[in-house]
Length: 336
Image 1 (cartoon, helix red, strand yellow):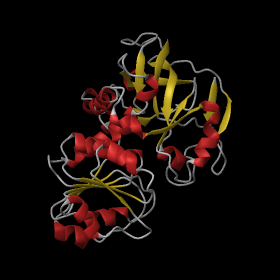
Image 2 (cartoon, one colour):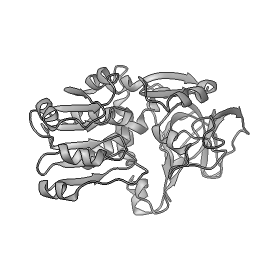
Image 3 (cartoon, rainbow, N blue to C red):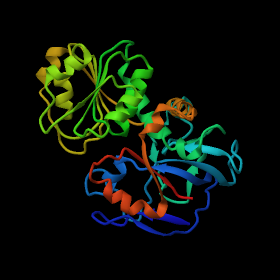
């Protein structure tokens, strides 16, 4: 099969031939129809805390159809259309049995979507309706991550919401927050390019920032008051502190950004406002199924997140270009 492979930090990904995978007893082989490029994939090819070993096939936002079955597989057939959650647990503990494998003590992260085929555990597979293009189903993973963050917030109908960051996760948070009842909703980003997408998924205001922090008054004016919920969706040092500064009294701050560096904020600021700071990571499988259902209409708002669709051979060059933030939002790869 063809695959795009990480070789070493500081080097471009390599498009090459790899052996076709064979399924283990409890695995299936998925012919990949679409795979999203995630910001965490970029981090994994560096030298920080997210780095992966050489010769790794990245890509964890993917969907396709089943082409081979392991000897012990039940409940899936050849040709089944599936979206693949990028992690699996033991399959037997209370967390796994309640659709929460991300809480399993034996959680295993599994990628492999930058290829024509990938072996996956059967419990990673979620059926995809015939009405949904399998390439589009690759969007379910970032949508589910965002939905989990909004659920973690305990969002109240009519609430004032601020989102820091207009990448795919920030915009997906905007989509769910509005769909689940947010009143005024402002998205902040250092680029103007995401403005149309932010408004299309439900933002009522878009604030372009310069190198300094956005003035407190500018956010309050856009929302009609101090934010009651703030979502940090960037993952850079200083953003948690900024979220706390913007948050109103007894507000909730949810951190979805994955910052791999030391960070600081002033606890007194959070304590004085009695702010509830929560973190959010991955998702439950029920949220993944909800995300898939949200993509089924051909005019589903989350589809505006897609900025480009490229073949597998073009991925190494596109991947390097994505290291510099431009107009791109979510890039999808079509391996076949």
